[in-house]
Length: 110
Image 1 (spheres, rainbow, N blue to C red):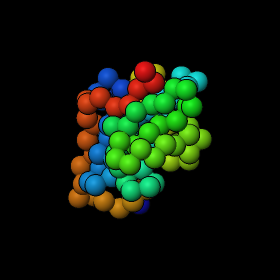
Image 2: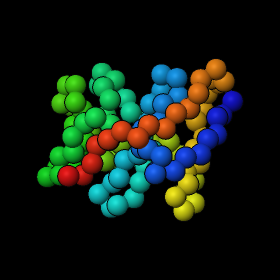
Image 3: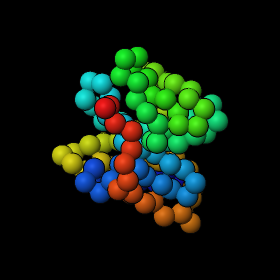
Image 4: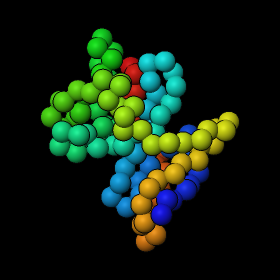
């Protein structure tokens, strides 16, 4: 059963739901995407990675695996954005978990 929740970018850019993590990623085009925070290599926290502007790739902080934007977009979660409010639908039946929005730094294009 899907879980719906809403948040604003003013609240934060890292979302946790039990052990699942997602972060708001701003692409080189300037658009925002909600991305799974797990590196496909070893599960490292992509939100803590560094952006390689020369090659348009996100580097995992654990093993330095780098992912192009196109690979990140394959890991995105569908959202509906109205103004500053995001509504997200996450698949899964985890009623016992609380969804939290964290106001901590995530990867930037700098």
